[in-house]
Image 1 (cartoon, each protein chain N blue to C red):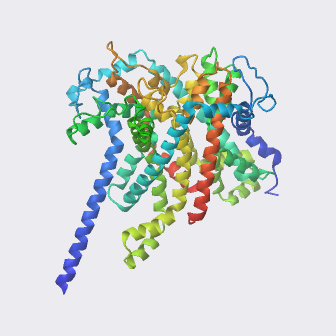
Image 2 (image 1 turned 45 degrees about the vertical axis):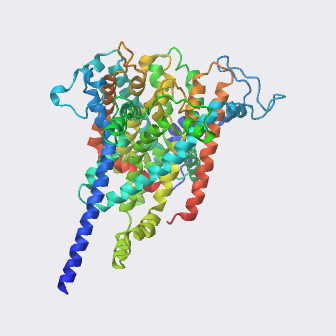
Image 3 (image 1 turned 120 degrees about the vertical axis):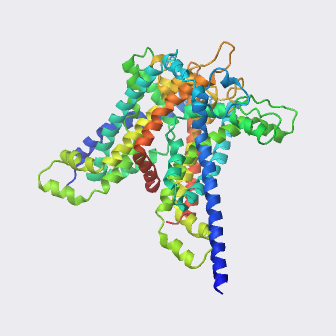
Length: 299
Length: 326
């Protein structure tokens, strides 16, 4: 009797082990699928001129074979990546500061203040989120051209054209309002009794409490600028020195005299653009993931 | 008097956001419709010959008609629909499975989670270029695997130009035109980059499901597949609905991924616009602003895109109202 029981238990345990094994192998397989593009990018970027044109391609390189020089060629090459990166950082910083400020003020009005038409207006904003951005892009391009920020573009024009249209976001207003709403009303009443103004209450109480959400908004917005391609491509078409990194990356032609694409240099440039994102991600993972999973639950 | 009305103050707080939204969001919506009904709008001269509905002998939907009659629009439409209806279901199912598997393990969960989240934080142009190298005919990883592991004699021309043989049967010609190797490679990239967000949302949904349901199922010795169908799926249905809707909207707007992988010409070398989408067409028209009516055609294409997204979203919401368990 006990032997049968024991037998059964062993069977169940073995079955569990097999299931676990399958589970981990499947997850590992997909993890490899996710990592391959990064690996291939770095690997290719370290190949020398001969290695990169050999078929079949080698799957790994010994450190002694690494052609670090490719990165030098990128940094000192014809495409001014330093400048494009600086442009991106400036645009990113300005638009993020602007977005965070307008978002905090608007979210406060929606979460804390009573005014006529608040809910109706909020619904209109939410409905607007469904409209594809391409509907806006056409007119916004006409608008910034009309403001004189596209033709004969100065650096200042370019910064304005690339930041002002993105200095607020309905999604972030919605996101921050949800956080503000969780702050108990009693805090507000207590502050009122103490004679604190609304403005001071917002900056001294609400903003510190909502700090994690505001950090998430800051990171997501800054990353969005780093990856922006379409809009900067449109508005900097007459002055290419004002481009951002993505435009520089796609616009550059890495070809040798024979007209072959130099994939090693191309991938080195791609990795230079990717690396800051990976660093930000690994340092601030908590805030980014939090923002993403939040948006799903509340959506 | 603590909860008094603050009409003036509230609008003061809203004013910075509101001013920007008025100029860059609300006005453009109306202006897109205005542009779409302008007749022969010349952007360079800033002139138009009136509206389509006041000009005699001109159809009200003149600009829409010109857009719809454009062969390139038909191609853009079919490409967009293929991306939407193939890549969204595939990536939703894969990410659903991955998040369920991920949720059922304890060791290395955080590690896998971090890896699966990586595509979310990457630059689509940079990674698209890496995918182009991976799919390269001679130096790419995929063809290397095909030839050395699967014993194929030579690799496939994944990103090569597509030549459509008019003498082939209609169905095969259709596949050559639309569901070709470059499209498949593009879809691998699109699926890759879409997984991260979906897995994160599903996983946080799974983690918020009350463990009692699973405990009850274990007491009753319910088979795993039944637990998945009767507990996990229904309780996850709000997230599934949310993800499906946002992914459909996102897939309708696919453009940057194509630029990343194929460059600004939106197609293999020597085969420009092979993978053009509706959004790609909108930007193409925007770049032809010196031709009369280009802005109006861009606006009408954007409106058609909006209408399609709207119809699909409403349909999705209707389905989820019936099927989603809150």
